[in-house]
Length: 291
Image (tube, rainbow, N blue to C red; front, side):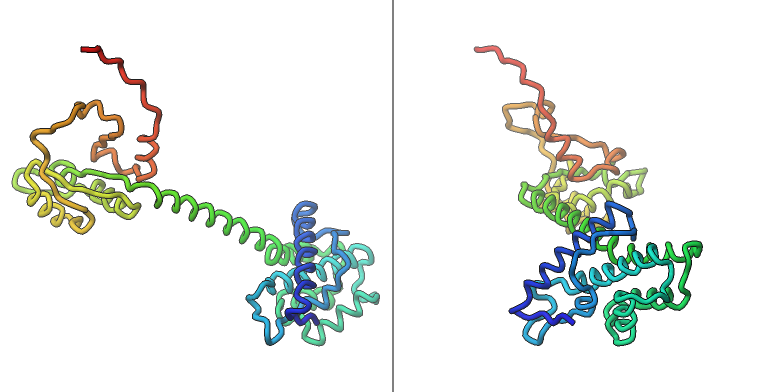
């Protein structure tokens, strides 16, 4: 039994490298257990119940779950090879002797699924015609090997997602101005009816980090009161009246970084989709005549 400490921890690290090579061989060659996979030369019975010494936390440096499960996979590979070559688990060999001893002395404490499968194989001593053997090995492959690669893929995807979010967080927030009448609220006679898609869109933009302003030709107070009416007041940075006079050297229709969205077509939009639209190459400006 391998007891990892600060002196021999390098041994565990090298065994994990061998285990990963075995995992790759299983995945590339068979997509499961197959005959003659590269089990290397290490003794898996020595590592299947690996533990940490008192002065070494199990979370320190070594992945003990991978070490134990990988040793179990190596043992299963040996069992699979024996079955393919001999088709008789009652026939003794040094490997089968070690296996029976390990089953009887608690070696498989950390991998009970392996222990149960091995006991079933030894008890029934199946032949090649027994259809339940292949699914049994495949289930263990999925449990240990395939799940390891799935976790790697999930961690990679999560790291990519977090990296993308970090880039978004570094970018200046998307500034969005939101109208009231016939955008958030429809006026029908004396009734005021919230427009659900537009209200939800504002909530979604706030969740995605947009900087929101509410304005209305009815004035700042009216904009705030209307936003409160549909439950959005807390999401806006400020409430403004719509301008009546603008001092700007360009007409609004020529603004180079402005997207106008109708409330009936906003439902599928996001901060990311707006940024994508804003980042499209701009057409060259028309030359202006010199005065």
